[in-house]
Length: 366
Ligand code: TRP
Image 1 (cartoon, rainbow, N blue to C red):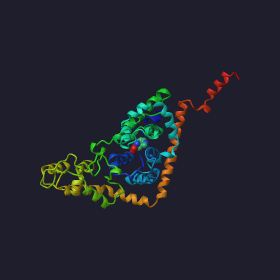
Image 2: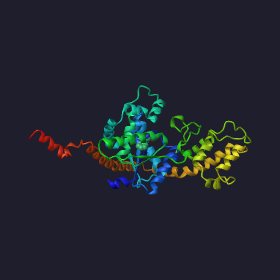
Image 3: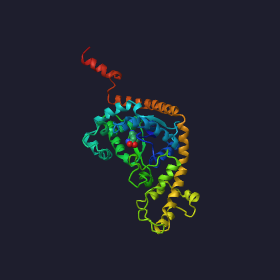
Image 4: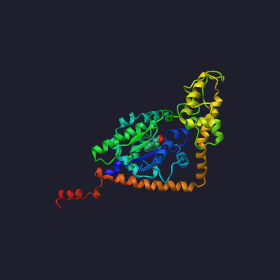
């Protein structure tokens, strides 16, 4: 028990509803790989959350089925290493459903209704009065995902904070009512503000598949270049000599997220750093095309090795399913152990409870 408390365990995941894009990369994937390679974590579980994806995709389950492998390809091509991180598919761990069922008793409908992420998702999807129960309760199932692995650390985007908060409440309640078997997780957010929520190439608040404004990790070099050259900048910056604005200027937002000082030495040696480039843009005399070309060079440098690894993995898809199967089996053992502890804490492990059987027997005087 003592030993378990000092262990640092990561669990995180994604819904397989599409390929992953550079927003996922800078907001979370890059960090996961760093955490994986830091050697600070005893266990790392990365979940393809297919069951959660079904909660709002029941009209299109095939989409979820198809995208499991896309997400897994993206994971590995970004540097998640199956030797160091356990990659698993949520639906293959039935213990998660059982945990969810018991946790449901610890949460009120009103509390779920207050969850801001669920609230805004309900609005975005126009569910109104036809909210699927499974969707409404997915924060509880997410609490099961996290606690099944006794995760201490959940690296996520800030839209997931309400889920972690709700998980902590469930853990607290469970540990108080029953016995302290669950671990309260902490969210781990991307430190740099600029990396937290990358806008789409059209400047809209979020990269999203349905808006068609994403740069995917699997895009070809040409696709990436075309997308960057079409990016939203500053509508008032008509001529190179005009002063430019940085506010809401997507190209500069991306530079804030992706650009490092060393990139200037390599691609734009006339400037020492991003501040100098920004100052010139604001003064006037710096054209969008030049800035976009610079961003393109940075993005190509980042994406090229990812694309190459992906191509390599694409040659052996069965091997990838094998990785996911093994990871799911390994994960299942861990979840089963937690479930056993949960049921024992709840005292619903009747057949292992010799004391209960003896007491009942005595009651009947036999
Ligand atoms: N809700 C997450 C998303 O929409 C996916 C997810 C499912 C998850 N279970 C999780 C994230 C557990 C972190 C921990 O992307």
